[in-house]
Image (cartoon, rainbow, N blue to C red; front, side, top):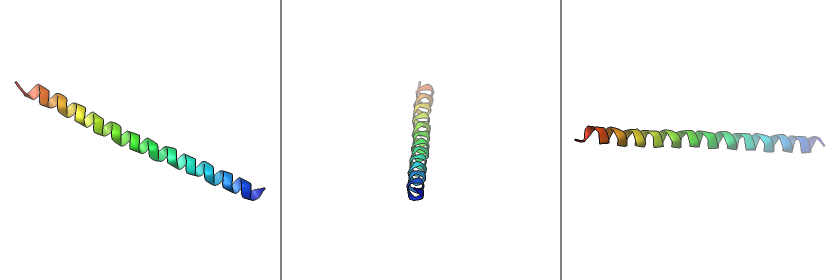
Length: 48
C-alpha cells in the first residue's frame, strides 16, 4: 500500500509541475502578444 501512495504522490506532483510549466508558457506568450499589439498600435499612431 505504501508504494501505491508514493506513486500517487509522485504522479500528483508531476501533474502539478506540468500545470505550473504550462501556466508560465501561457504567461510568456500573453506578454509577447501584448508587446506585439502595443508595438503595432504605437507604430500606427506615429505614422501620419
